Image 1: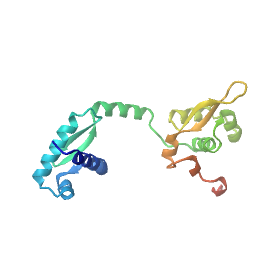
Image 2 (image 1 turned 90 degrees about the horizontal axis):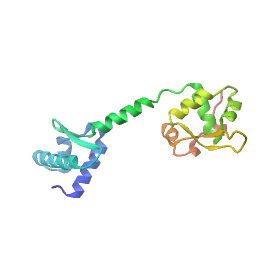
Image 3 (image 1 turned 45 degrees about the horizontal axis):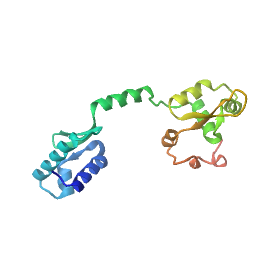
Image 4 (image 1 turned 90 degrees about the vertical axis):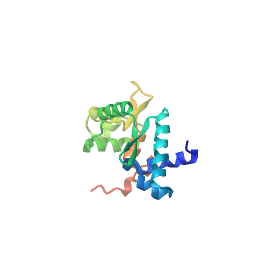
Length: 174
């Protein structure tokens, strides 16, 4: 049985190494142990880790150990991701998304006033991609939906918050 601290270190190394995994040579250099000690340590870790009720499992490929997602979970995630597969956004989608980002919450009618064109399909596609959402309504006749950007929008555009949006005066409009 491995010490708890060593287990935590090995698990952290799996995340640090990512797809490369942990080779025996890498862990020998890291730990200062012999190759036989390292192999035993990683085999024990793999055996104990794989008994856990986790979405991950450890597998050995020659002299390299890799942390993988269990097959059933992987298939489920892959199916869901392929359904919502992100594709490049058209200029019209980017335009609509920026209008929403700078003016949120905003109704479809307001978006169309700014764009000067029907935006039904684009709004639907942005909703499907998870870049915008609508939980609020405008307090007017018909209760039109109000659209806002999501955390996925922030993630894709590498922003921590909407405060990271470029200021309109800073954008070169030519």
